[in-house]
Length: 249
Image 1 (tube, rainbow, N blue to C red):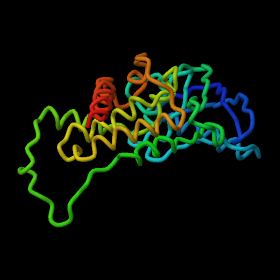
Image 2: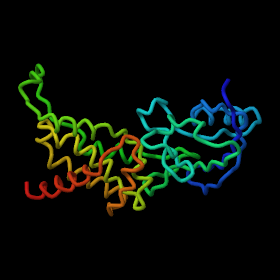
Image 3: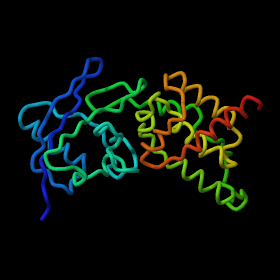
Image 4: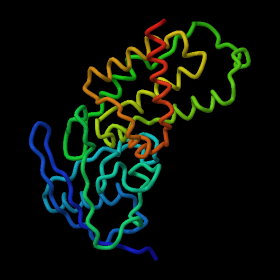
C-alpha cells in the first residue's frame, strides 16, 4: 500500500506583463510514488473544482527528455535531485507537512508568460544562428569514409545531450547561457561534419546570446551543477577557443 503525505505549496502566480506574487495551497493525501507534475495535476484539479484558476506550468514528455517542465523548487532548478528533470522528481523526496516553494526560472531573457511558464525562445534563437551543418545532395556517404576518433565522438554525443531546458541560465548568478551555447557549438566543432561552418557558427551564436541579454560567464560553475544532463564545463573552454580561433580565420 502506497504512503501519502500532505504538502503546503507556496506558488508564484503571475500574468504576463503584470507583477507577480506568491499564493499558498494545500496538497493533501498525495501519493509518495507520484511525480512532482502529477502532484501539481492533483492540485490543479482541486482548484478547478473550487472555481479557481489552475496553476500554469509547462510540461511535455514527462520522461526527462525535453526539459520543458523546469521550475525552481525551494530555490533549486528542477528540484534537489542531481541530474534529474522536474518530471522525474517524486514526492517521496519530500517530508510530510513540508512547505515547498515553487517559482519560475529567473533570468532577464526568460520573461514570465504565466505563473511558472517562461519564454525560453531565446535559446532557440541562439541555435538558429548556427545549429546546422552543410550537406551535399545525393546519397549519404558511407560512415566508414569519415573516420572519427572514439573519444571525439563520445564527447560530441555528451554535448548533444543538452535538452535546452534553461536550468543553466537560471542557476547562473549572471543569467549566462554559456553552457548551453557551448554544448551546441561543441557537438559540431568536435566532428569533421561541423568544421565548414565553425567560424560563422560560433560568431553567430555568441553574438545572438549577447544580443538577447544573456549575461557573461564568470566561472561560477553553478550551471554544471544545475544541468539535468551533466553537461561538462569543459565545453565552455572549447567555446572560448573556437571563438578566439574564429577571429583569425
